[in-house]
Image (cartoon, rainbow, N blue to C red; front, top):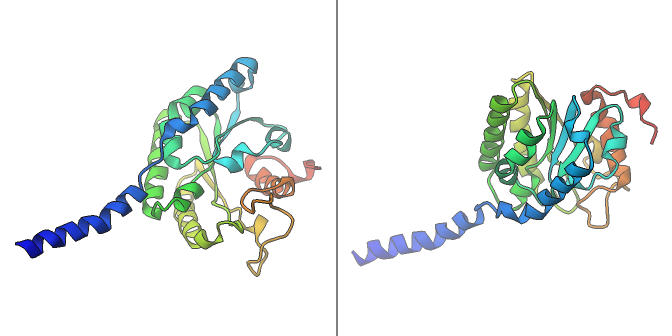
Amino acid sequence: MNSLFFYFYFLCLVTLPSIAQFKDPDPERFSGDFLNFDREDTESSVWKKDGLTLFTGSSSIRRWKTLQSDFEGLTALNRGFGGAHLSDVLYHYPRLFQRYHPDRIVLYCGENDLWAGKPVSRVLDDFQTLWKKIQNDLPASSFVYLSCKPSPKRISKWNHYQSLNLRIKNLCLRDSRMTFIDLTPTLLKADEQFIPGLWDPDNLHLNQAGYRRWTRWIRPSLGLRTSDYHQ
């Protein structure tokens, strides 16, 4: 009896930290960001225009300061919030997708989830939950997923990022409303070495040269000609 008790006690010690590790962060940490979005919405009517393309997700979107000019010809709205997980996008779903009713959604999210230790299967489940909600609520909207990027700072997780990317790509290939954009060629050379000069000093976020490469790569998938982009 005692040996059985100690066995289960030991099992709890081993599994409980793992469970805690995968707990979603508090989505209310972004309350200030969404208050700022509300203020911006009162000062601009861009979000009310027809044909809206909503860019959302984590800091790779939030830090894209030239997004509107980079995609001139689209009605583009940046609603990125740095550090976001897919669980945060789900929590704030009403203030993003139901509020703006975009014709097209461009999402960069999932990298932070995996970096925090969530398994690929868990992140994929959140992605599928999000897509099902979008399908139900916005049946006319198209969806573009920007793949998790490789970065010098987080290269230790690159295999996990590639695994998630592949699974989401397979989902997108089976649905005509979804587009998967692999950002890897914009950042890695053929020998899988990083293209120099594309990173902020933190080696995690892109600098403006990096965003220019992303813009040229993404524009055709959004119906824009790369030849019209001169930055």
